[in-house]
Image 1 (cartoon, rainbow, N blue to C red):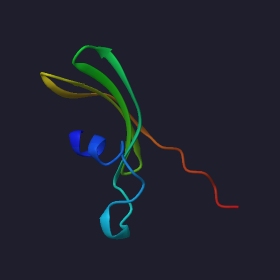
Image 2: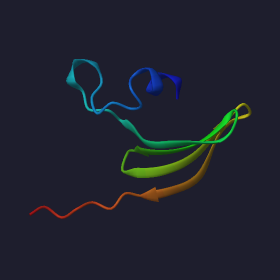
Image 3: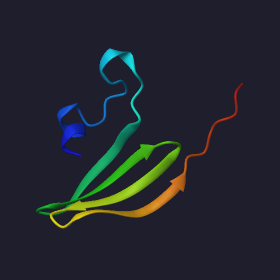
Image 4: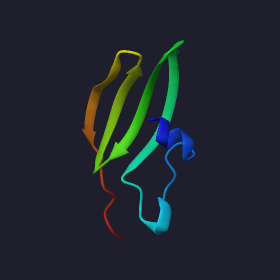
Length: 69
């Protein structure tokens, strides 16, 4: 997570123009050293708890794809 924060919270592209594999959509502090993070990865939207004892996936949902027009 620290790398994503250093790169501006999950920038849409990585170096050399490659699309990002992980996108951090939102973060919220829930305690002094604990955050909830909503992230998108490989067609999934994840709700993560990030704290001193580690990272735990609280929810893992498929991202709905919009039909092509």
